[in-house]
Image (cartoon, rainbow, N blue to C red; front, side, top):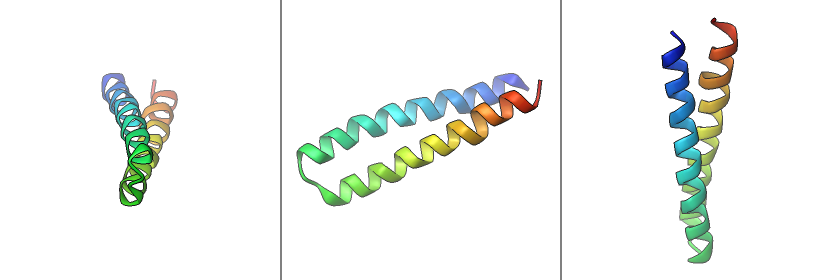
Length: 61
C-alpha cells in the first residue's frame, strides 16, 4: 500500500517542478494565459502532494 502513496507523492513533486519551470518561462514571455494555466498545474500538484501523498502515507501504515 505504501508504494502507491509514494508514487502519488513523486508525481506531485514532478508536476510541481515542471510547473515552476513553465511559470518562469511564461512570466518572461509575458503570456498571461500561460501563467493562469501553469498556476492551475502548480495548485493541482500541491493538492496531489498534500492529499494523496502525505495524508495517505501518514494514515495507512
